[in-house]
Image (tube, rainbow, N blue to C red; front, side):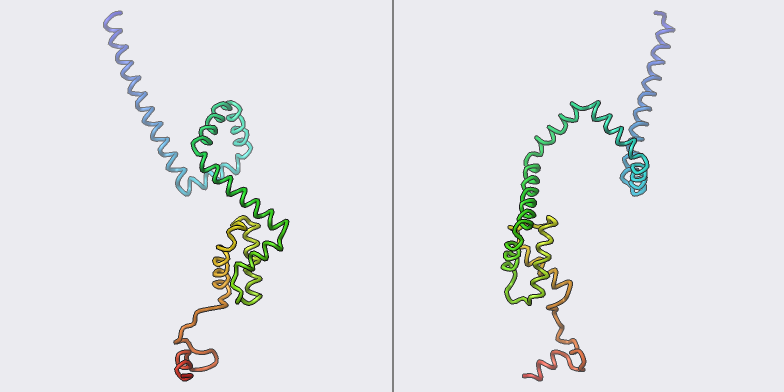
Length: 192
């Protein structure tokens, strides 16, 4: 090979390498830009709109990908299940406990009501107790709590009821008694 041709090949090779590096830098920059756009609020809104308008195309694309990459997808899920075995087992345990609680409320609601009433203080007025028991049963049916956790959660739901309706509110001693011009503190001092 003549020297002139060899020099020209080296120059072409150098130019090709420079372009390849520029292209890789460009692609890396575009990837970074796309990542930042996806994380911004405008980018998220754009992606939501895009997914809504191109729903069928995306569904077909996903089906094609799964069909073409079936073995890799199965392997990826198998690896995930192996790596997260404990978390999956714990999640399944919680789900099954939730389903058992819901089934128990559906099959024997009287037993669940009795347990809820037993978990609440006996000195509560009936209308408050009924509201809190209904809240507890609804929470069980919605899957927020289990029947076994009802005794511990009864205090939380009773507190929420008291906050919502202010049945047993804390009153300042400096507050005026409704309909009078005396404070609670003055009334207590006068009673002694």
